[in-house]
Length: 406
Image (cartoon, rainbow, N blue to C red; front, top):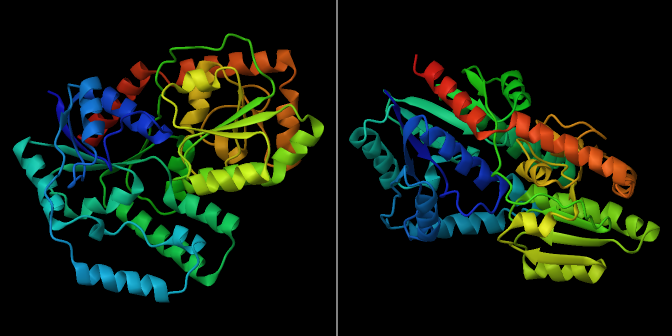
């Protein structure tokens, strides 16, 4: 008999415009093959209807039940909150470290909506994904199994952000408080699923005592592979401005690597894929030459297939789906230790890895060597096909749910 699983997400993971959307979409597809899957999310204004329709078209076997009831907002509370934020005199960067994970993010009606789905559809497993939804565990019925899928460890990301933005008393306190809350919420679940064994160990080392299961994320099967006609002078960065690790990564590369690379070879061009504000685009293109912002692209494979992908991530946790996707398409990757964490890729085997600006520049220049580039591309493609298949993910999740329900 199949489990009835309710998945709670921030939004429908469609279109597949980010690594997180890909991970959640493929997870839904895998789970729907081994269980009866229901999906809910908070959308009182109906802004996510197009996403929902696209998801239902791709995965019709899933029952989507969004929460759309509009509830009166506490205007007085919002005004007081805005006033306190202003007089608090914190910088814009400090807002990166704002307190997270509070149940106040959702109205009472949404909590009731989730409980009604549990009763109406005889749900026996509720699975919550993404850390900013973790507090929903506090209002779930006691008789269901509660599972949390951890895509990115918040306390790890916050600690790296603290190192990148610089430490002050407010930021240090915010990071510590968020970590305490995150670990405490995770320990209210019956089980945790992470996307890498490295993240699992970090959770255990930092106080999570509930069962933790290793899983993984898969990328969509490539509809195009590289033609071995590379443009060795074409670099590409994939990621929207809405993610602070992307902003830090792009700034790190431009401020520390790009000008040195152009001094050595001024034929390089750099394309940035993803949604960025016009203000940020103007600032960067005025300061740095040969940089192009392409915005959102419908087919990533077409935009990157003849290029070199750079992933200069210095902040983050979880799996960089963009690296897996590049490997499957056949695009060589230059990244950092943080960027490749959790993926079994080795330096000069499946990718090039460097954590210093000069090392990063040298790695890009090394890919002018056709033999090295072909070796990396072939090894990475084999690695992805071996370790990140949909069939393997289905069996993985089926085994995990079986253990949870014992």
